[in-house]
Length: 475
Image 1: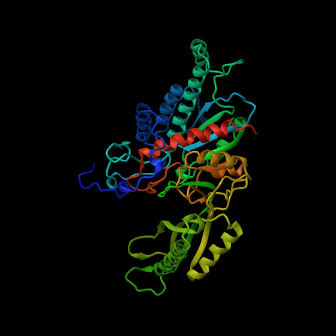
Image 2: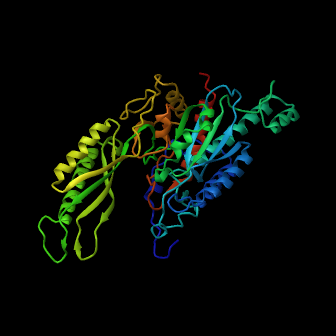
Image 3: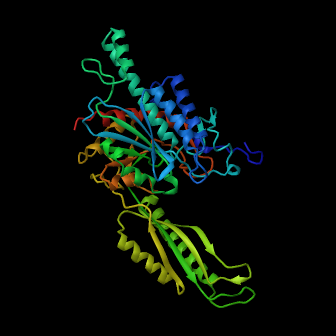
């Protein structure tokens, strides 16, 4: 821990315990739980900041060993245009390879984590047994989800063999089937699931490169015949889980402010700097309106427009009033806004900000991505919906892990950020964003990011049922 930082007392540790806290004590035994947490810690220690020379090869070594440990097929995929940005595909083959498959998506990269802002080394994967936490960049976004997938697969395979051994006392025959590593005709089958399950580990999600779109156009991806996918969702600071069926439209807007150059010793009227200040004032006023709307309606940021200035550039030299200044603004619109409406709104903002303000570049970096299958309204408390088979399977599996007397269990919502799910939906693949992390402060991209060990292990239990139900579906 840096010497100049005092470790704070986390008030979340004192939250009231609910029946959910005690549901999964026997899903993983003590050794399995410890091993799962150590796997997460090891994954966090692989530094994969996508903007800082990420160690994607280290990820490959880690996942290759993991795949061998679990008996999964392992493939490293390098695209010709992106040789330094590999994908890793791990597969548990199903009994019926003619059925379309299930895809479990995760991204391998994380955002930067300045060490001076953290109470521990952000890439140490520190497990705090006293607080019941795992610290590190990526614990919420989204390395914990990846390990939860893998540990759920471990338990699914383990339970399958235990079931066989209970059903058939001829353990030698069972062992021979276990070692065969492939499906066999007859009574003993080496896969616990009907459908194949693919775990795809993708690079560069945090920097919005085109690598994912390129991968999805390959014959390899098409050969997977994906019927349904899961990707990341939001953590929840309450006792319910979020289920995300759509994403906001992200626009990077570059506003240009022009004026007359002059000596910086002058008091030039209506200077470029003054116009720039007016633009910023207007943008943050719009931001405040959206924030008040969110608070007044008790909505999340998914239902309003978010506006944040992320980059500022311009100037010629230090003693000269510049002829132009630029601001890049990250704006995210709810799916109800069409592209023509977004363009009209941005043009109107330029007009209201005053003379000399223009909108020089509008680059939509995430397509509007509503799930192609019907899902409940984003503001509703979700109950299993018969209108969509995949939604029903996911929520039905969750129902097994929601203990009374809780009235709020899980909610459908628009994902407030952007994920690789958008590219899957754009290609007609139904996808739900889900991260089983509840009762936890929401800390993706923030300092001191962590996940509670109990929430992490509970997520493994939840995924056991979700993956099993999805992959054993008969339709």
